[in-house]
Amino acid sequence: MPCFCVPWECHWAYTSGLWELRWMGICDSTMGLSTTLFVMALLLSGAASMKSQAYFNKIGDLPCHFTNPENISLDELVVFWQNQDKLVLYELFRGKENLQSVDANYKDRTSLDQDNWTLRLHNIQIKDKRLYQCFIYHRKNLQGMNLIHQNDIDLSVLANFSQPEIMLISNRTENSYINVTCSSVQGYPEPAKMYFQLKTMNSTSEYDAVMEIIQDNITGLYNVSISSSLPVFPETNVSIFCVLQPEPTQTELFSQPYSIDAKPPQPLLPVPDNVLLTALPVLLLVVCAMVVFFITLKKRKKKPVPSHECEVIRVEGEESEQAKERVENRVPERSNEAQCILNISKTDSDLGAVMQSKEISSGIREEKHECGTQEPF
Image (tube, rainbow, N blue to C red; front, side, top):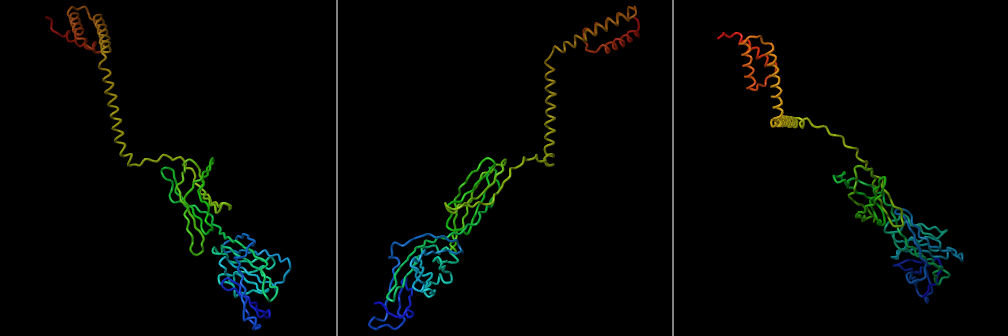
């Protein structure tokens, strides 16, 4: 039964998710010692719903959107917010805060803006992401209270990821690939995508990779990373970017470019001294072999050609004939000397001597001298 008591002798308290009107004063015994009024929030229908968004460690707004068309005084109102687990965040009872009903997780974390009926939740954490409800009751008389407004607020929490950072795992390999990793930390919720982007003067390419996700057990924030082997060509300047897409509706985050310049042409390397000392004898041996080969080849080419030798013999024969004529013209008219020269010429002609004309003349003179000195028969 209702409790009729003096206004300041009654107290509204929130117990086990329900509002209870407790009798604090003295009432007519025929009316009973106390009565309880229950408000079942989840059974109410037709309530307005809205979404709100807050950032990690910042302030989140839980608006009630009460317009107060009848201009009801705060002394006649009871206003409170509770979460989906029916834990009270804040209570305003007849214009005064009632901290006794506030759950320990929300004490000293809330403040009410009475101008727009918005509850401010400070130091937002990931666990604050949930559904909240705002209730406003009008206390018309001592017999009870009427619910005049309800509002549902779906609070989401965001945490900005750090700028992605590229780290080199290994340098350029023989097949022109480079191994890199990229990481970004302290973000929420899970990102939608993370990939590498390669830019050259003439093209832009994307390379997807499997994203590794680790969630902090205390804060609920995510750390993400990817690794990949990317093609890099020595003759081309390349800029590598790491791109993180937090959500499809949010702006992508780009890392600082990791630049790789094209390699300059490689100069000829100096030959070590020990290589020269080793190669020099081999080189000399090859040169000597080539010289011997060409000399041998030249000699082989000269041997099978008889025409040249015949020509030489013919020329030498002509020269010997001319020398013989000169000798005959110069010999004095002495029968012994002429007979000697004739015999010598015949002997030379039969032998086919290949001596030069000067040598033949010299030989003739010697023979002539010998013949001149012989004793007459």
